Image 1 (cartoon, one colour):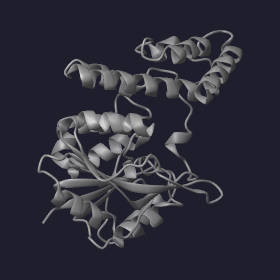
Image 2 (cartoon, rainbow, N blue to C red):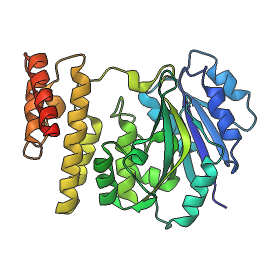
Image 3 (cartoon, one colour):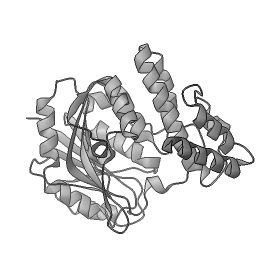
Image 4 (cartoon, rainbow, N blue to C red):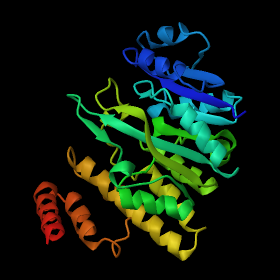
Amino acid sequence: MTSICVVIPLHNKGPHIARALESVLRQTRPPAEVIVVDDVSKDDGPQIARSYAGVQVLTRSTPGPGGYAARNLAIRTAQSDYVAFLDADDEWSDNHLETIDLMIRASPADTAMFGTGYDEIHPGGRTIPDVYRRSGGRERLLGFPDFVEAWLDAGECPVWTSAIAAKRSALLDAGLFPEDRCRRGGDKDLWLRLARQGPVHVNPVRTAVYFKDSQNMVTALSHDNLCHCMIDTIVKLEATEPSSTRKLLIRLANRETYQYALRTAKSQRVRRASWKHFQPWYNPLQFAILLGLSSPLCQPLARIGLRLKKLLAGA
């Protein structure tokens, strides 16, 4: 029987951890292990986690950004064949692990990662389906080029952390989460490296919930105004891929760089070093906007460029 370990990083998520753990313990297909890693919480989250029978709580002495080091500790500790990730402020439907188990059984032995659908719950209760479902995604087994293309087609990564399970050996071979390289965005960096390890099985059936109004969210952190850590990974991968896949990776690097710059520009002028790998001949208009975002006249030029892009998109 396939063994699955559930990994939950915990940092000041006391108001949410009970909801997450109860969704794990309600699973119609129980996990072999549940590992919570306390990343130096200042609230009662670790005590709440320890109150649940069958939950192993590990403790780190230094908090790591994004929960990456916490997840890595749990992966190394786990004894199971597969690892399913759940953030402490999200939850699963009762059939999440059963769905994952069925996907594992239906997939080739070298499949590295499995992703299901999810709903985003925004402040005020507004519910939005995940980007893969919104883009018309269907259940598929994706090779590496297909995974990158699905990412580009959807406009965002087609899988999401709390709706992912992965083969433990593939996680180790891929190098785990980039705890020493990324403050944020490290999840996507790993998913890209995992997709290079073996096929990705995606199933848009909704089995998870992403709460966008939770306390102490990593996505609420300000941007570092540095080159996105995933871009360095893409540059390394480009050297090993055929021309057709290399072009997809360049498009992906440009897209992620540009989106990251737009978010950074909301609070500060964008540093040129943050888009040093952008290849302008693939997206000349976006290149012009990046120049504007890095200019002392950042805000006026950026507004003009963005308006121009909207006009061209509507033409």
